[in-house]
Image 1: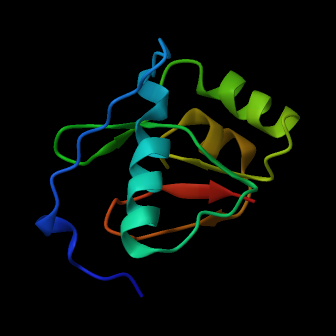
Image 2: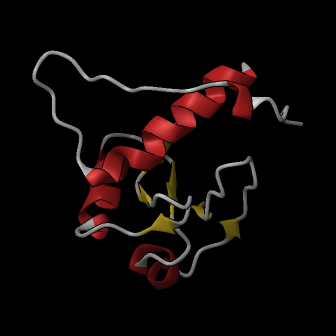
Length: 109
């Protein structure tokens, strides 16, 4: 059960060291923040790929199929993608729905 105290925080993400985040990192950063606020760790075998719009909608990103393949190659067994992504539809695998305040689409398992 997730608490509903997120509205109390203003979160600013600053990436240092010259690293550039692409839109595909939106979902991963958001999940890290939600995980931290709720003190619930994200499973280490889970990768997140997707973009979050200004209104909170999840969107697929260009090249998501390659990102999913790379995450699998790196040993991630659960990859969270927006349910609208081609990857979720193409794989035809079981999709688990999450509703943790961020509106995560589906998990390919």
